[in-house]
Image 1: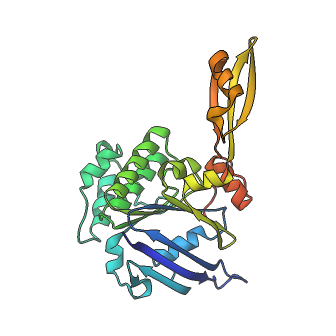
Image 2: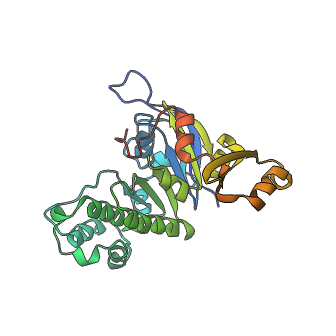
Length: 293
C-alpha cells in the first residue's frame, strides 16, 4: 500500500505568533496503518491535524493526499475523512439519533447508524436528548459521528479520554477493526496505553519539529535496557536479581535461580511508551490527557 499522506517540509505560523508553530516537518502516513502523533501541549500536534483536515490552509510545504495535492482537493475530500475532535460538539436539545441523522445528511454515503450506536452501547439511549448524556456517552457518540460516512481516513484526537476501561476497549477494538479492513487512522493522544495498544508507528512532535518517527516496538528496543529482572523469595523475603539479556539462556546463575528459587515475577528491561515520551520530549505525563495545543 502507498501513502495516505505524504508531508514534506511543512511549516505554519499563526498571524498572532512571533514564530512558526510548525517548523519544517516531514513524514508520511501509510495507507492501512494507525499513525500516532505524540507530544506535549503546544508542540504543534493539533495544528498539524487541522492542516491535514483542511481547517488551516495558509501553510508552506507540500502535502499529498493519496498522490493528490491537498490544496487542490475540494468538498469531495470531506466525503473521505472522518474527524473526532477531543471536545465533543453536539446539539444538546436533539436526541442522539437526531444528531446522527443530521450529520449523516452531509454525506452521499453513510454507515449503518444503528449498528454503530449499538456497538458503543448508545442505541437504547437514541431517543434521549444529548444534553442528558454523561461525558462518556458524548465521547462515544462523537466517535460514531466520525465513523458515519465510512471514511477512508479517520482523524481522532484523545478518542478514549473520559471513558471507563470497558467502553475504551470497545472503541479501541473498533479502531483496530477499521484498520484491519484497510482504513487509515491519524491519532493524537496523551494516553500512552492507547498508543501501545493501537499504533503501528508514532511520531513525537517537540516545539514544532519531529524528534522521532518509528514503531513502538523499535522505540522500546532503542530506549529499553537489555536486562532481565527476577523477583524471588529467599528465606521469606522478597529479593531481586538482574541479569544481562544477552546470553541469558547460558547464564548459569539465572538458570540456577529458576530451578531452585521461589520465583514470583520475571521482567525484561522493556521501556514503557510513557517513559519514552518523557525521554524524547522532556515532559512528564500525569496519566491524564492535557489540554490539546
